[in-house]
Amino acid sequence: MTQLVVHGNRRSSDRAHLLARGGQQVPDISSLVPAEFGGTEAQEQQRHATISCVIPAYNEESTIADVLVSLLSQTRPPDVVHVVINNTDDDTPEIAGQFVGEHTRVVKGETYRTVVHVHDIGENPDKKVGALNYGYFVSRGHDYILGVDGDTTLDRRCVEWLEKEMVTDPRIGGLSAIYTFDKSKVHGAMAKFLVAGQRAQFAGFNMDNLVRGRNMAVLGGQCSLFSVRALESVMYRHHQSAPWVRDSEVEDSKLSLQIKDAGFSTKISARARAFVGPMTTLRALHGQQVKWNFGGIDLLWPGQRGDSKGQPLHPNLRLRWYENISMVFNIGARMGFLLLLAAALSIDAFVFNPVWLIPPAVATLLNLRIALSMHDKSAVDIVYATLVAPAELYMWVRMGHFVTAWVQFFARVEKDNWAAQAAAERGRGSAYVMPAVCAAATFVVLIFAWSQQSIGVQSAILSIGWPVLYLLTVLQTVFMLKKLVRRQRGFTV
Image 1 (cartoon, rainbow, N blue to C red):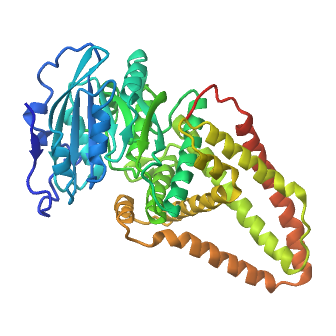
Image 2 (image 1 turned 60 degrees about the horizontal axis):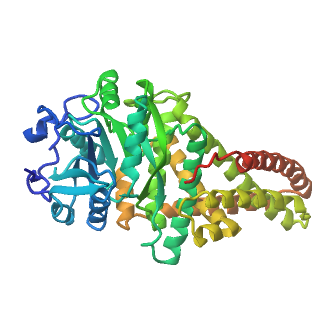
Image 3 (image 1 turned 90 degrees about the vertical axis):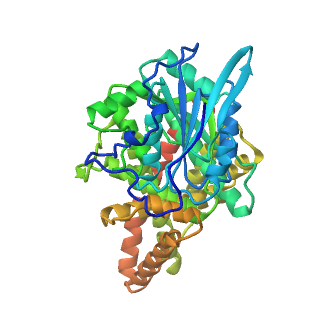
C-alpha cells in the first residue's frame, strides 16, 4: 500500500537538473510525481477534512524521527505524511524509512489512519522550494496541506486546533502555529543564551501578531496549515505552475502575500503550538537571520527586482516596516550613546543624570511581560528578561544581522543565502564576526576623528548630539510604554 520512493542515488552529482525548468517562475515537477499520488482517484470520505502533511527534509537525521513521532502522536493526526528528502547526504532517508506504512491511532473512540511516504528526490536545485512543490503535487486531492520543517516537533493538539480554526472559517487561506523553542535538549552556556534570546524574539513577534487581530504577516514554513483552494487561487492569479516560488529568500513570506492578494486571510492560531529547531551558535544564527532580513527587505522595497516585485504598502508588511524602523532607532540610540559617552569622558564633560535609567527600566519591564506571556515560561526566561545584560547583548547580535542584510541588499551582492545558512549550520564560514569588526572599526575611526578637533568644535558636537539622542530615546521609550500597557486579551505565546 505504501512504499519508499527513491529516485536514484541521492549522492550522485549527475542529477543537478532533476527538476527541469519550463521557463516559468517555478519548475513544473508534476511529471516526477508517481501516479499513485496523482490525486485523480476519488478521496475516501471521512468525518474530517483531509490533511496531507509535507516535510521538506535536508540532512535531518538527528531530528526527523522526533518530528514523525510528534505527528503520529497527534490527537488528530494527518491523513498522510510525505517526507520529501532533497540534497541530503546523511541517513535521513533510512531513518524516515522506518516509519513508512500505515499507522492507526484511536483517540476518544475515533480511529485515525495515517499513511507515511518517504520520497528521496535527490539533488534538487530549488532546495526547500522544490521539495515543498513536490509535496504539493503528491498531496493533490486533499483539503489542506500542513507544511512542517524537518526539525519542528508539534504539541500533541497542534493539528487538531489548526484544523478546527481552518474548517470553521473558510476565509482563512493559511494558518500558522505559535512558534517557540524546546530548551530541554540545549546544552552549553552560549547555546542556552542564544535560545533564550530567540525565545524572547519569537514571543514578542507572535504577540504582536496575536493582538493585531491574529493577522499573521508570515505563514512560516516551520508549521503552517494551508487551504488547497487558496494555493490553487495563487497559482492561477500569478501564472505559476506550483504554489512556492524561488524568487525570494523567504518563500513563506512571498506565498503569504500572494494568499492575501487572492482574497484570503493569513492568521496565527490562538492555541496550536510547535517547537522549532533553534540556532545554537552565533554562526548559524547569523546565517538564518540575515536570510530572513534580506528576504523581508526584498519584499518591502519599492520597484521590481528580478521576478520579485516590492510591495511596500502591502498590509502583511506593516509589521516588517515597524521592525526595521525600530531597529534603526535601536542602532542609532546605542551607537550614539556610546560615542557621545566616550567623547564626553575624553574631555571630562560627562555628568550622570538618573533620567537615563528610565529607558532600560522600561525595556526590562517589557521583556519581563513578554516572558510572563510565554506558555512554557521557565526560570531561565524570567532571569533573561530581568537581567539587563543578556537581552542587551542579544540586541547587539540582532543589530549585526540587520546591518549585514541591508548592506548586502544595497550592494546588490549576488549571494545564495540558502547555501550560506546551510554552511553556517554545518559550522562553516566567518561572516558572523564581520558586524562586530565593522562596528569596532567605525568606533575607533570616529574617536580618532574626535581627538583631532578643537575644544570649541568638540563642545559644539556635544551640545547638538546629546539633545538629538534625548529626543531619539524619548521616542523609543514612548513606543515601549505603548507595548507595555497594551491589552494582551488573554493570549499566551
